[in-house]
Amino acid sequence: MTPDELSQALSAALAAAVADGTLALDADALPASVHVERPKQREHGDWATNVALQLAKKAGTTPRALADDLSARLVAHPGVAAAEVAGPGFLNITLDAGAAGELARTVVVAGDAYGRTDALAGQVHDLEFISANPTGPLHIGHTRWAALGDALVRIMRAAGADVTAEYYINDAGAQMDKFGASIIARAKGEEVPDGGYPGDYVKERAAEVLEQRPDLLDLPEDEAATVAREVGYEAQLAAIRRTLDAFGVHFDVWFSERTLHESGAVAEAVERLREQGHVFDDGGAVWLRTTDFTDDKDRVLIRANGEPTYFAADAAYYLSKKDRGFPGKIYLLGADHHGYINRLKAISAAAGDDPEANIEVLIGQLVNIAGERMGKRRGNALYMDDLIEWLGSDALRYSLARYPADTPLSLSGEEMLKQSNDNPVFYVQYAHSRTCAVDRNAADRAVARTRDDGSDAFDPALLAHETEAALLGRLTEFPRIVTQSAELREPHRIARYLESLAADYHKWYSECRVTPYPDEEVTDTHRTRLWLNDAVRQVLANGLDLLGVSAPERM
RNA sequence: GCGCCUGUAGCUCAGUGGAUAGAGCGUCUGCCUCCGGAGCAGAAGGUCGGGGGUUCGAGUCCCUCCAGGCGCACCA
Image: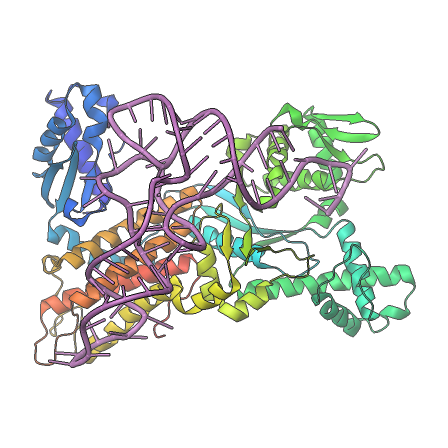
């Protein structure tokens, strides 16, 4: 019995109580769905509901009396072993072992599909993340968005949403010229100019540019600047793609800011917003009256010198996403960009959209290493390439994805290194590889999911040990964890769930054997436990995949 | 000054109004004669930043104060 089925049984019991007059409430005063949850204490049963506490006052009765009535109705339901009233009016429900154990087979049969839901079916989203300037390597901050953003794409898709992962390349503007100038300086063996990019990687880019254009330093100054900028840009973007590839992060769309300017989309966007009546001219500049909406001051679109601002490009970019058919536009931004949210929403509103429905901004707090803020212009940068090489993609992805985005994260370099052995990712991966080891050992002793004659050996009532009840309950939760994680845009819930599942599995492993002792015969208990073992393996693998982390068969 | 985020065990962090606030690391004690000890069992460790309020019930919601991070461009 799944929690959804139990919830429906409770709804039916409430409706019946209303129908026969026991419960003095209108049928439409009942909750749309009855909330059931896993109690923290095992002795409180498999599931608990507080619905009696919520409804008693409205119905003019006491919570315990209402819970008593519900209990009597519920125990008549097949699969429910007990329903006890506890405390102020909680209803603690215990399922019979057979009804609970059936889940092991359900999971194994569903395979990769177990955990997929249709909670977000029909939703179409564009999810933009990282979007770093192509003037340097990705650093620790980008790494966090990469881990979270990619996991979110996977999780939302698992919940049925249509999601496009997009990277916005900020390849327009003055910083590209500064990047080119820095490359030329390094090509000459000189220090970078003031305001340039001091990182050592610029020397690598300079070497790559020189390899392609040995004539770089012989060119006229203007031409050299262009070549350094353009060839350097391509080399840096290629390096970023290599890094993300090594991290297992895939983008569906790489969107160049330049194309917005070159195609006239920026100018067109200004005109479209003008038609909507929110554009005005002042002091020679063209403004968007963002204060009509949620912004605290108006913003310039076209400078007095005729150059469009970055903000104008973002307006054009917003309209591009709208025109490309994305009702939902999700932005994963760093905390240092949170001042941008109101402007973004103003663009949406000015374009005639509903910002609350069409824009969603997820703010990710910064990562601190040993108390030092990371910034690529500060010379103390910790690059994503180095992190991957140091800790491995799995440990890095997992340790960054297991915290909510809005938690400021501070890790010391030493601790991250130490975590390479004690990180929870290994705990979860170890559980998975252990399920595989159990499979191998079972095969050696000819323990299979069916009997030797091929007949069905699965008997869910044999999964009656307390660690098995806990494990089965945990497996039941997976689909709703996926749904919840997708709806709240919180990948860390998957990681936390996997850690709980791994703990339940390890406990079960230490109590219940799948393979009999050498002097014992193989029974249906062993065979049925193999189903449970394989169900756990499946859910661990499915969950790790949602985080982009591997599920090794051996470690 | 204004806005956003955060404040929970020694450390790093979970906990979308419920029962005795949890996990990992660190510290201490047990468990390898049999499916992987990267594991299990147990112990110690808390005024959930302070103070008000809403509620049958608040770490969670509201107000206020304190502390820390980040942001408030005709930069990108």
